Length: 84
Length: 454
Image 1 (cartoon, rainbow over the protein chains, first blue to last red):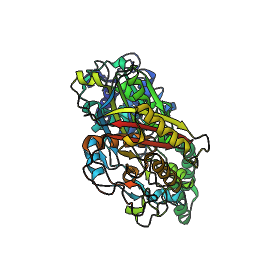
Image 2: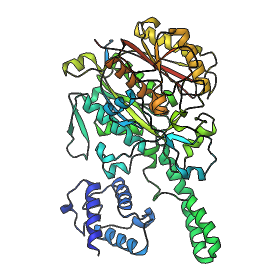
Image 3: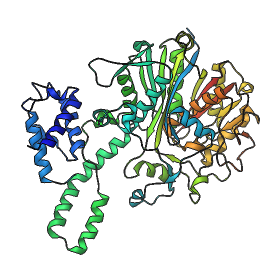
């Protein structure tokens, strides 16, 4: 797991969900622990797209349940392609 | 219940300045921001007009808008929020953060339930629609063409394909918030949400008269006691990536054609006028308030609104009624609403687009109603045409002119189309009553009458 992308993902999640970064654990689930609504999750993915300049189509991100899963997904995207 | 209505705050985002002080100083200096249209626009169309009035670079953070908000707002709402925040703060309302809501405020000194929002816009969030549509159309064909190029093309083909791919460029995403970004009521709703304003929240889509109609309705709401405070004005944003909106106006033959000398091409009321200067957009927002409410707060008063009227040409969707009868009826209606006669008016901020038809008809009506002595200028000679925001800019200029006893020149006016008292130099004068008027595609006419508050 890339430490830099981990920090950036947590910062974006904290910003979108209006929480402190310390509340965003790696194993936290978006739905149950962070109580992110479907609108929150839409906002989160466009903010992550903006942060990492990678396209994150809904069909690819709907199965991401935890913070760690999002970080792994971002790392994979960063490894696979140059900025969109 | 009839109350007196005053302007206690204003905010501006414009091509000649962000913030009222900067804007007004540049108005009085007769400045205009004119530039060639982006070169890439000409890859898509043969444009007849080649100049526009672009906005300065704007950082939404400077308006208190963070990334999460920005990504869910069309630029038109960002402009409206920026101008609204300035207007509210200049009116003297302290913004108190709302607990549990990110970057949301309530106004100390105003009852949110007695405060309304009345906003005008021509096309609302059209840019988001165009950007999403481009993504919708181009994403898959462009990706397919890129794959083909990688697998099949020779070096010679690559150059051609790369040129085509460049023309097919689209944004990063299909924004899932499109519906709430595009809807014309989004800027007004965004202001209401941001500042916890729970009174009526209205959007007036009346093309080039939108700002004037919005402020007119806000005036009536305060006058009739439906609200104590109204945040009101106009906003527009037309800077799409491919020049589509510019092309729409260009194709209809409304934009300035004679672009050989960009600085002097925009010349409302001049014999050599050739159309209006397209603006990237802007926002002008006012705070209107019941006079007694304002006095209880010791608010600084810019001017008083005393009359409003609307008429409709019922003639053509794009052209003014040839005799200007409905414009005249509108002016006389606004004066009757204000309890004044035409001889009481010292200053007319004209619609003044610089199109052949508008300026010919408008000047003949002004001459018929007011005679030769009333001062006349066109704020569009400085800003170009901001469509749904234009009326709000012009009402603000009228209020500032009454407050300061001076107004800006009619820029680039050399040979006037009619013998009227056009403002040719900035000087102190006794301006007590002003009228600002707007006409719009569709056939809408609207005017607001203002008075200096002694």
